[in-house]
Image (cartoon, rainbow, N blue to C red; front, side, top):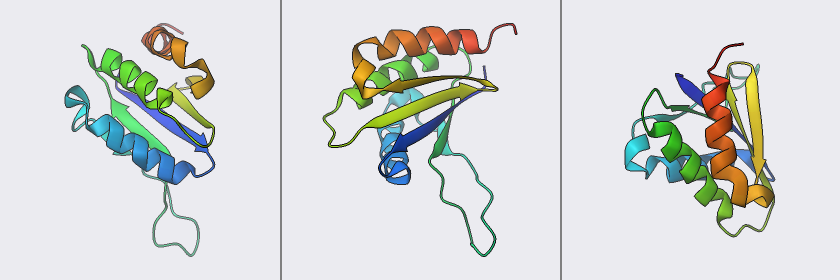
Length: 118
């Protein structure tokens, strides 16, 4: 597995993606592995702002760390709803703060299988 794409859906997805990126970059095992996905600018724009992150998980424990970090991130008190979609190629799983108790196990199991046979 190379990279997991994380898309954020909230009232302000760009700001939420920036907060999530900052959160993930504080995890020692994820430092240097979190980047914003490059989006093509719209006509007339100098650059595009994105609400999508790419996390390089490779092999080893990075996937477990990512799943745990997302669980903790989603469990923080919020004034608005947030949804995070994790994608690998054409497979995805969406988690919300409402499912926080199950997030770590759900993400870990799903992402582990996302890279499996098709």
